[in-house]
Amino acid sequence: MKITAIAFNTFREAVRDKIFYNLLIFALLVIVASVLLGDLSIGQNEKFIKDIGLAAIALFGVLTAILVGISLVYKEIDRRTIYTIISKPVHRYEFLLSKYFGLCLTLLVNVAIMAFFLFVIIWWKHYSPSLSLLTAILLIYFQLLLLTSIALLFSTFSSPTMSAVFTIAIYIIGHLTSDLKEIGQTAQSKFSHYLINCLYYILPNFSNFNIRTEAVHGINISTTYVLGVILYSGFYTAVVLLISILSFQKREFN
Image (cartoon, rainbow, N blue to C red; front, top):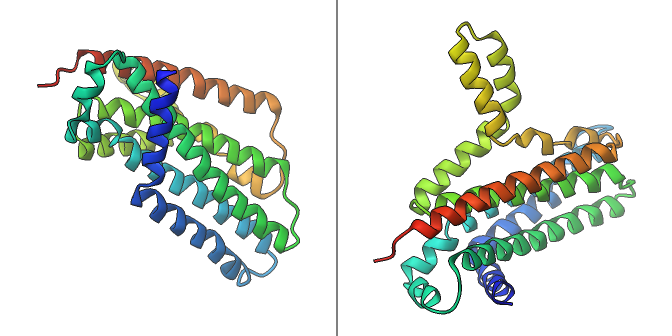
């Protein structure tokens, strides 16, 4: 009950944030602009609109997850409301999980609105929405859930600026983990080989969530693959949230 109440309060605060509206409006403008730009690409209109639409949903979802996620804990500390909250019968883990679930709900609304606009445009242009397109949007959302947990982790022990830097770095590296495996295989020393392989398995593999190419070309994605990625996201997110809770439990507020 406590988690639900704080989560909905976090959701209300997030949707009133100017950053949320600015990013959402800009994303919708990009999706609409894809129609105009798509007319310039002869014979590729449908693919162009779908590609730009998915890219906009992913990019602006990531920006929302990072910019709002890194400030979830900091705002409470800055406004000194954290002292009131932790003095009440609310455990720290409940507070942290509430913040996370509140942002997850915010991202769900964010992604749903952008996806709705994309499908309206597809319908308006008389194109055929494929199941793979919906699947791509679903995996984008689960990618955002994982990224949010990482942003929340860094926010438990660092400033918003550093949290943003760390989260963006993890996000970029997470899209290059496949390359890490290849580098590890060609490493000269055993230590380098071991270190790179460790990084490959420890760092999140965000490239698993990217099926944009398949979605744009209408290629169906196997249910096994989708479920595997969702389970991967859930497991990794749970581990990161556990580390976040342990970090937040040890933090002292003076």
